[in-house]
Length: 109
Image (cartoon, rainbow, N blue to C red; front, side, top):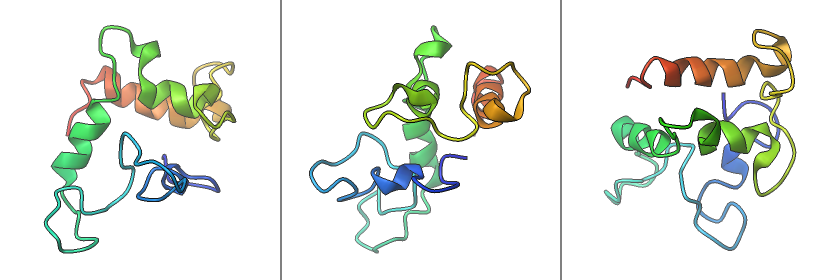
């Protein structure tokens, strides 16, 4: 969901993505575990742990995983499928609803 279309999250959220800082979370497969094997970061548990770290389970609307793609992030803009002004179930917020549903189910691995 976060990688589809132009301007996917890895546009900035990767080493050197914005040219100046390391991002707070990786949204792609990189050597997050620092094994030294290049792009072998198929450590999905590490990725899952980082994603869960962007969820506020006591105030879901404050979750960075939901709010940043919804237009409240450092680059502004709105990720397609994250328009929270649309009613639940509408195509304009289908991706937001998918991630929200995953969170409401306990964000299982």
